[in-house]
Structures are given as C-alpha cells and as structure tokens.
Length: 115
Length: 114
Image (cartoon, rainbow over all chains, first blue to last red; front, side, top):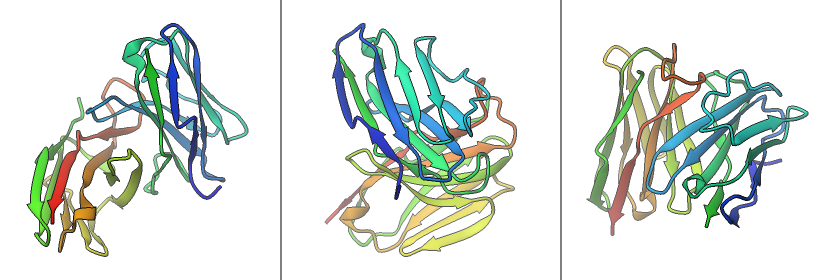
C-alpha cells in the first residue's frame, strides 16, 4: 500500500477482554516495529520484526502481550485480559531494512481504551 | 543506560520566529531521527541523520557526533508547525535492557501563535 495502515483506529473494550491490533506495513519493508504511547507520554518500544522473526520480545510489557508477523507483511499485536493500564495509542512503523539508516514510516495508530 | 534528552520540553513562539529544538544523547549512535507528531497523533518522519546537516523546506537538522548533540531548526515558523517534535536515536550498542531498537526522547511540544 501507499503507507502503513493500522486497524482499528479506535477500540474501546472492557477490562479482561482480549484485543487484536493489526498493522499492514509498506509493501517490501522487511522491518516492522510496534510502539505504545500512553496519554501525555513518549513513545515506548514494544517489539520489532525482521521479516517474520522477532529476535527479542523483552520489550513487551507483560506476558499478556504477544505479536506475530506473517508473510513478511501484516503483523498482529494481541493483548490478552486487557487492563486499564493498557489504554494507549499503539503505533506501528516499518522501514525498508532493520537497523539501517533508512526512514521510518509510521501508521496513524490504534487508540485503545480499556474501561 | 542509553539516554536521549530533549530541550526544551515546551516552547511557545510567535509566527515568523526562528525555532531551535535540541537533542542530546549519551553514547555513540548509528542514526538519529527527527519525528513530528501532530495533535491527531499521526507521526511523520522529518529527517534521518548520521552526520552533518540536512535541509527540507523551512526545516534544518544538524548533528554533531563528537558532542553527541543534534538540533532541529524551523525558519519562518508558522502556526501549522505546531506539533510535538521527537528525537529518536539508534544506539550502536543498545543497553536499555530490551531489544535493539530506537530510543525516543520525551518530545518538545511546540506552539506557534499567529
């Protein structure tokens, strides 16, 4: 596609429910990143993918968070048993090659509100 | 721990003023990004630097590798420049306790008044 696409753009859920957030990177971009931004806070790195592999998942806040990527394309961030502290904007970005000096392209984010 | 510090945190200026936003970091880097985040939340990449200076329209970004410092300048500022400007750094050796990735500054909230 023309840019990084994220869905849903807004999600309101009840505490304890599971949510899935989707990121569709720019075609051909091998690197994909997930970030979280709480209200009034800076960006918090969660996880990155090189192709379909996530070499290090230690940035994920808890074991309720998981992410996968298939076909070196779409990625899904899943939050199980959501808590109110999970409320944030979840941003996805992609770049042509990981750890290169290339530009990052961000999606518009998925705003998650846990009631 | 590798750190990125931005200053000022908040900046309000009048239309037409020359704006400077600073970013300092603790150890050697392979790349530094300047990002712009508008009130709606979308983030746009402005520059990626590893040395020297880049210019795009009214925006100029410079980096001094020896001093571990980068600046973002806006000439002839306009109300539409109002946004949060974020410095993000890729350290050569990441020691933040997590995966190798970008370390973000907390952002500079810029307001340009007409």
